[in-house]
Image 1 (cartoon, rainbow, N blue to C red):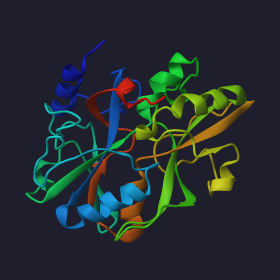
Image 2 (image 1 turned 180 degrees about the vertical axis):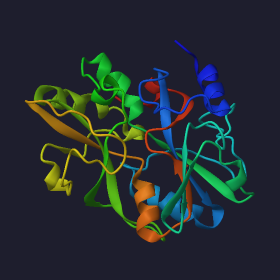
Image 3 (image 1 turned 30 degrees about the vertical axis):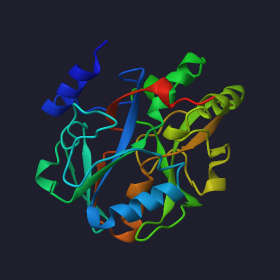
Image 4 (image 1 turned 120 degrees about the vertical axis):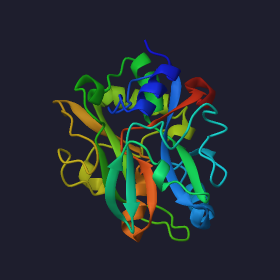
Length: 257
């Protein structure tokens, strides 16, 4: 199994472009949001008011691309497989590096990612369908409103993992231990109850098979800031959904009793 250093090197060199679910077991993964420092406090307040979709793991100093708490050997301008660039709320580009977008006033936020607790689910005998089907996790915009802060507002985005009903109960117990990476599910069962019209057509990521006897289980998702960018016509740079930053934070250090 490859270690973090070798995977980061592949990402930085552009030879790794796949989603990061299931790679580097034992280490936490993170969503990225890059904003100008003029709106960084408002976003930090947005995260504080919406800790389920936006749990903060690290914030950089303006202009500094090294996350001191989540990977001192990393450069957030190059060490994520794919980035999304939003300008006035429109997704205008997907790129492998963001050096040419970075400025002395850029501030990066790393938010906890649900890929982190998938290892614990697997250890409890719960299969991860998007890994089985070799695709990205399905993600959906919902009718669950986030709490606004300054320029930031919009719907919560959720990720979905199908499983047997008994496994869903266990999944609640397992993931509740990890509040810094979204914690327990926000919804189990009927997708329409949270505004999802078609479970086979995710807004981000890929559709996965929902087998007979299974229920969809939904977790708050760190793609929520991208929905806020679209809703409020904001400039923002993020990870491409499913293509996360690999931190050097051990999974178990994020677990609580």
